[in-house]
Length: 147
Image (cartoon, rainbow, N blue to C red; front, side, top):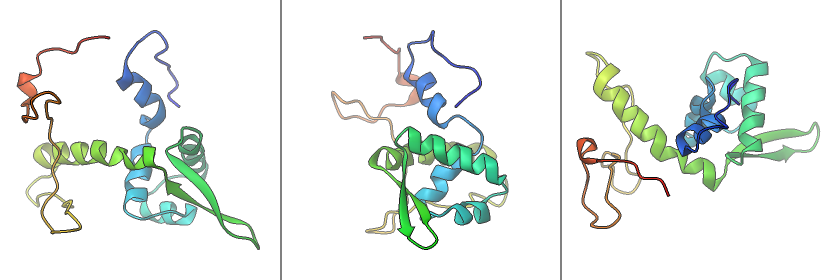
């Protein structure tokens, strides 16, 4: 989806940016995670041009982040539902929100708090070592190794 591709890079971040790196794309996923599923619903949530929204939705469907499902026959109408691949982006969006809350929210504080549906506690993201299960501070990530 980006104008420039990263074909010469063996990097999952670059490949991910090809799917979700365009302006508006992560905001569409954010709104889908919040329950928006129809074209007009996305338009109501953000000041995005119809053609841009259509392009971004098509790209997210093409990459398996959303699925387009018909919900009405006459006239035919469709909605967009997150796939399991799309729902996995919740962690990415939570991490971006946390960073923004820490560095950009201003005096009013965070505009939105993520809460656990079962208990109402605040939801946070963590970096955890898969071997020892300990939480890892970002300054303790020593290197990225290639496989």
